[in-house]
Image 1 (tube, rainbow, N blue to C red):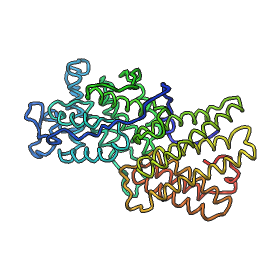
Image 2: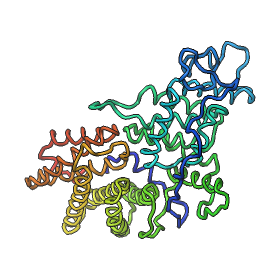
Image 3: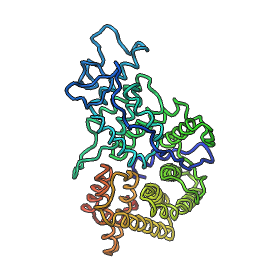
Image 4: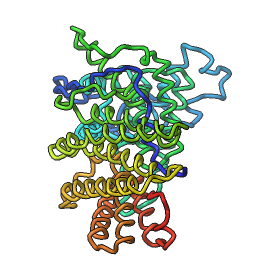
Length: 470
């Protein structure tokens, strides 16, 4: 059975190891610490400032070094001493290299401050794996006590905030991205394993998923899972976060979110009437994604059990739909969870349509009606949220919603071609417009739009007889 599915299905498909998880998100968005967001450069021998441009960040670099990360001024191989063979020199060497990279990329103090503020107001809301309070407390230390892994996290934030050029469908596999991956490899080889390093890799993976770098993202998420194991986070029990010490509580909550993003999504134990954050709801729904994928890609030999499992998965997913729609009306953030849930239903129905033996006429009619219902739901939700495209804030868009809109557009295309009813074509065009808007933030959405255009242009009579919609 050949089915094309986005990588995020697999990324979010790891089953939880616990039968019950508390999916409620804690509020880590406390006000920043008092004082200036980024203090003036400290007067310390470890810091250097450019005489020609005193506004450049005073990252700790070799005084004569203005080269890139690969420069021999950072890694003096011409010397007889290999710094990586000596533990006392290794960390300092890596710090110098990463700080030089940050100095060239992050720019002035003001530019860096604006970058962080913009991130916390946009993408952090979408993917809140970083404890805001602890992160803001650590920021001033990049001048007085720079740490390579924390600076790497800042570079990852800079990367995730990059957007495609207007009207461009080119790859986001830029020099900035390649340098980021090089820095990750450097820290990994040097033994810099920490929660900051894990968070940086997760942000890079999020970037890769959103910009259609499927192979790189699959490698990245596997690496994140290994880091979780290396740090021992997979063995921690996050069920009861009741520390009296706020620092321990924030640290544990931050680790819990990193594990959920990398390896173990939460289960379905949270009551539907409990208010949770968008990230927790996405993790909760993602548990079902794994069940659907295993059902579709690894069917059992027992046809009766396989059919009953499909019905159970459908009932469970449909139970979530009213809740997700209601939450989605209140806050656009919940679009991701709605998209993930609907996409899982599309995958489940399409798997049943293409199964062997084929479904009965009665069941096939039910599957086709269900596909139309899901597509109409996505159309209705999208048409409301994007009623005024010029007012849409693309900075908070999730890359996880575009695939469900692409699937819904394909369903509308097929019903239009089969029935000739204009309403299906009009709905397809609306979804195509939404994909174009998403493409302004995530290259992956633009790719789905081009794939849709190719299906429209190349539609033939054989497509009507194809069992698979996708």
